[in-house]
Image (cartoon, rainbow, N blue to C red):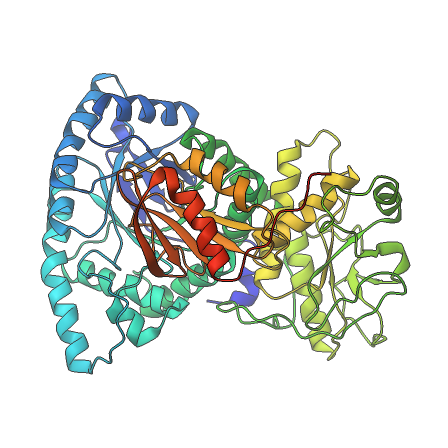
Length: 589
């Protein structure tokens, strides 16, 4: 794999085709040169057949080509038959995917009725106890043999019935066995997937799709890249398709920007064969975002040949590019270890000064025209550069911003220059009738790609013409990309048939009480499956433990159990206070 070429020039990653159902009868083919497949997941309980059928039809109407359902119990797995038969009776042939956690016997039953099974290697045959221990090579091999004994029957059933399978690894939900050998790392996530894939291949089963998901876009990007690198090292016939998604992205603009920052950059690199956007909203609203990300990513992918020096970063792990600190005559310093700053034009600065933002944390931190930035064409060698000036890509350079700024960073590295880099979302004017949602998603993709590679010390967004909207978009995009925190961050799962409370209602209540806690990360999870592990690095967690009961977490540690739902938000606030992270909200006005 030549990552220098992949990150500069678009070429879709070649994969084998995986059939999900019969394409002649409404099934889909994932991979190869087929269009990217869009999918979503039901939130209706799996035992409520009519509700599931109705919601599945709504998703298909919105553009879903695959529909996923949870199956927690044998009873739910058996009811997949009724759901599938009723959909077929109504003329809907959309392939169904069963989402399985913890119980191999449930997967065996579900495989009889649906076209695809999704399993999580972290909990399919293991119980996560967050225990620390050392495994000898012999003990590790024995654990793998135990996993194979539980997993092989499902592999054989899928092979017999012509079912596909997704091996879906989620950050934070690795088994103790993998966690204690590799740590909670990208390598651990990839090795977890490969262990299960080797079992599949041992039984000559190849209808596989992989996914590497996290709530942090930088982790998603690094894991998917590393997985592809490891697959290529394994051999040419390990060319399995990739499912893309950012878990627990949340809702509204934040959820869309976080999804753009994690999914869009990979699509721009030619990675990804099927996509799901996970929003804490009606799942039908996820499909238009899938469409937008697929379209915008192709527009931001560079297909022009480039001859370039080696890119100066590791594509598999995040490290911010070293740069010198620049102090503007007016404004905040940027570069070095300073926060990534938000820069505006002189015209926008004047408008913001005349009508200051209501949120005092939203401030223009420098004015572009006052910085005397060097505007370079990265297609040419940089030559000698003055050390005390920031640099950026010149307007009019005929390259999409991700490729242009990666190339700029390579040019600076080539001559040993550590000038701070100002990122732009556009290098030429956008069409005047471009939908506002595209402007936002486009900025999320551009910044997500570059910030994940450690490139950028300040951002200068010009695609959004309104000064106040542009300022808010810059800050929101930085937070979505995991580059800067200026407000409370929420990690919220999209909900499914396992969810034990009204997610949208609860997230609104939590936001109302905690939305002023700058720099605090709060997870709201519908059930234990998406609970302690997949909350990843959240400071506090609100997790469904049983119907009407909530468990509260500090990090990954449960500290309060079986709290009545009516009291849970108050108790969450008390928990934040106990840990010294609470401040009183500002008075109105």
